[in-house]
Length: 206
Image (tube, rainbow, N blue to C red):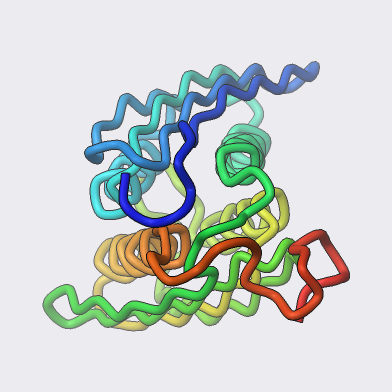
């Protein structure tokens, strides 16, 4: 591996509640392979696209109370993927820290900016036209991205718009993936933490 990280950046996280059982395995320095099984087809597609474009190896196995609705499964998968990303990053030394990307998909366009700051914050503007894309509520897509940013310790600004909701959602996840890939890459000129405080713990980074 180039740069100053020099360690395996992998994690396995499991979250079990009365509503869901989610296990995630993640390798930040993978080749983009994905095996995502949440029971919600479009959601599987979005995280598979994320893994492919972030060049992250991602395995997600989730069961949840889909007989109620998809809310708990969608939220908890995002939380566990974010937690796995945070664990794989370790103390976040040697990384670029910041990343940004824009993605066009036919008539849709998305732009994402991330900071692996350790401080969770999400500003989202996803212009969906309908209430659902397949079995997935469009309202839950923003909720999932907020949950992911929170557990990953990312500051995330993400905008997406277009005439086709499927393209809007997919462009958003692809832009997020490319921004995360850039932010988590090894910086060959960086030794240590990319912060004047010397740490990227929550509430301390500048």
